Amino acid sequence: MRKLFFFGVLLLIITSCATEKLNLSPLSNNFYSETKGSDSDRGAKKGFDINIKENVNASEISNLISTFPKFKNNGLNEEVTSLKYSLQNYLYAIDANNSAGKNRAVKSFEKSYKKIQKLRQQLNKDDDEVLNRYLVRLKTNISVIENSLKGN
View 1 (cartoon, helix red, strand yellow):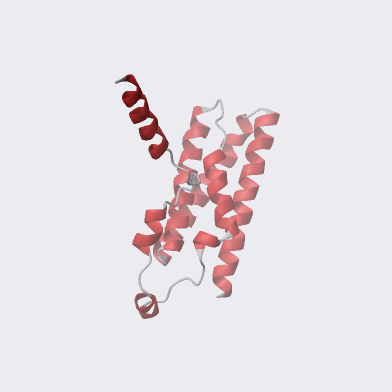
View 2 (cartoon, one colour; view 1 turned 90 degrees about the vertical axis):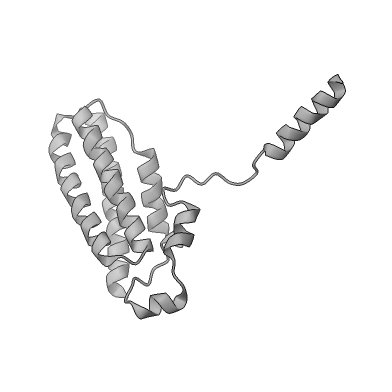
């Protein structure tokens, strides 16, 4: 009886283990399949000619969102959270070919960015340098994506 129980548990453990790579992106796989219409749907409306799923800059933004550090200043952390939501909405809007949503997300990002710049003055030198590195990388990646969208 013990052997049967042991093999049952072993079989359950072996079959339940996932071997897929963990997806840390804020854009889930379901999101891509739900938002992408057929080719004939995209031809009917003017959209973005960018594959956000394979875009290096969008991947960098996703990584920055997930690794953004916490600071001692609660007001700054709240504004960083708002900034992250704006960035997620930006990526979602581009993937869904939603120009109005993208523009709203950019304005929201800029608003949070300006508030964070004011709150940076209260940080110590090390935290300020870390925050600055993240903000520069975010702004650079958004600029590259925007330039590629305008070029199409």
